[in-house]
Image (cartoon, rainbow, N blue to C red; front, side, top):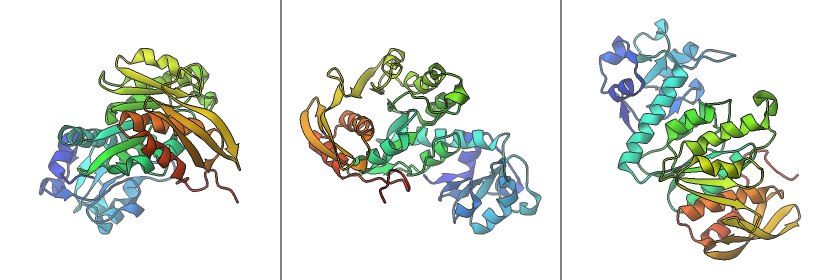
Length: 331
């Protein structure tokens, strides 16, 4: 998180400060942004999010004692009247507004590249593999956890600082418009759609509705942005029509820009030749499952676009481990 004053936060999220906050709007938030009071530390900003089980407003006082500079609330908390509180109509929307403001500041002043990833399967694994490769070239933010909704994604975005070179944002689909909402906050330079599958089809009603939601990421890209599209279903490649800028494809077909050939499975792990415009190089994945080839190709596509060499990419894929606990472990 960048260091930011209460005054700038108030303006960014349209908040009304209580007396304690108004008395010193130059107070600086220098720590993390949290919706879980147990994670609050010195310099944090606490968002008192109402939830299905409990209400963040019940923990404003505890957050103040833990070192929070201020709390963003939907109503004033009386037992923390001496604690700076910023009142908004909707805490979750305010969280998104703050993330949007911070990323706009960083994009204007730093060489930050934002990569958005969505898809019915493979988002977290792809994000984690990509982090390992990008981190060799500069500070990379890509939380291991599946922080991919309207709360988790902005929190992960707010971890970016002036030193961050790459920000990888996982975008989950909560319904039509949900990915468009996250993309409007993140303003990704690169948008990746892995695959449109049957996951959550009961919630969306049809695969077509899922595809429409996933396509919001590609439709959001600026003309200078780059769309990266998998070729593992009938819907994803067609999303290229929604973006006027450059699109590249990945898969196992001969027409793919980034592809895998000569695929073999040894002890549950995929080995293949990675083919890019630069040439061909052998890859031996350490993570389990043939389906990981598609995720690896998505990672290779992003890294290629960002200027990594074929050897860097192949080497990174061959050494990447599963970072997410309980995912594809062998016992």
